[in-house]
Amino acid sequence: MPVKTIALILTLFLTFPASAQKKQVTEFKKGAILLLKLNNGFTTGFRSATPDLYSGGVASSPQITAIVDRLRLGAHAGFVYNNKRFSGLFGPAAALKLTDLRTQKPMALSFGNLQLLAEANWGTHGQRMAGGGIGLELLQKIQLGLTAQRDYHLNNWWFQSFIGYQFNKFKKVKPQFD
Image 1 (cartoon, rainbow, N blue to C red):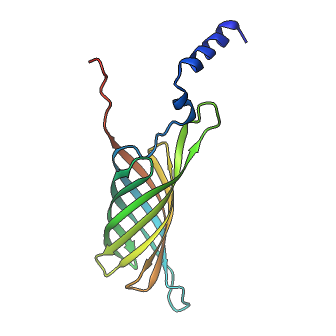
Image 2 (cartoon, rainbow, N blue to C red):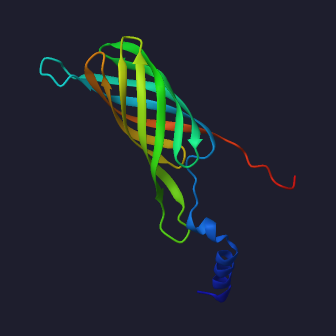
Image 3 (cartoon, one colour):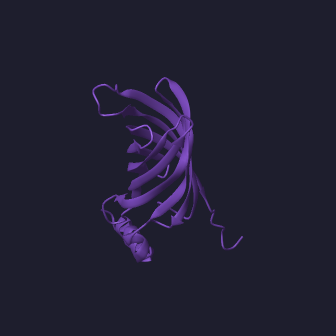
């Protein structure tokens, strides 16, 4: 390796703050997001007399960071097709970050995170559900997940997978000398 390249690399590592080398958190920043989701799954009553029914829909989930780098709280609203009819679903939502997904050293850049999801939904056709699941957020833009919710009023289970696009709304950093 040429001497100039080695000198440049050493200069960058020595002038770069050590705290930034150890941990660079890019997830769950202070601010708000808007998550648009496409859901796909089925409902079942776990009985032989009850057929499993397809369910799919679209949803919007605005969330705000309650605890930086740990917890987002928000709401969930959308439309779902199930049991040969369309319904509206709405309710509270929460996302708890479990872990960061990071590259290997030396910079340890975060490219995503794993989240524990919780939702409660009420529907226009008598649905009353509570449940949760696991979510994977990639590059602060794409979310993938699996959820299970128990409809305690209609006595069935909803199993869903989703893919979502995240619109971020973070505070912009103003330059110090402007």
